[in-house]
Image (cartoon, rainbow, N blue to C red):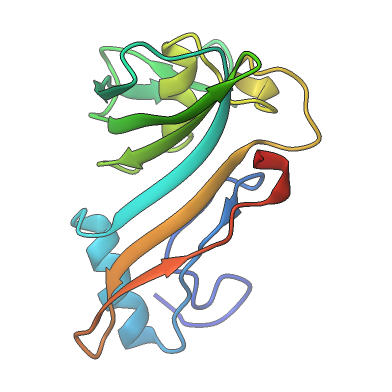
Length: 166
């Protein structure tokens, strides 16, 4: 891995339209150490999303494998041929036909949270790729991320919830 170019220091990904916390590294040894924690699923991530409707139950664990949709290569979907994917959700608030939901992924698949909510027939507002209604943006926000720094210190990084989510 060469620590140069456009992606130097990028530890992990967020979908292009997702706002919130991202971790970057200043040098290659830190990059490898931080990326290993993502690979080993030692990082605790919390997201906030706005969905249409209300989820029942209001707190649950979604375990549904995710794979690429062969009929639409830009999309992923729940399929028995997919890779293990797990999300804990909790409804924070509901009003006017929408819900604010806290999402904690135990795995890190592409479009993971978007696919799981679409699978529950409650796509994220602004997520037109997965059946969500039109909005000025995708209402998915990486709220917090807990990771161990190269110094050994456990840190929790947070990001303020954008005004669109209120």
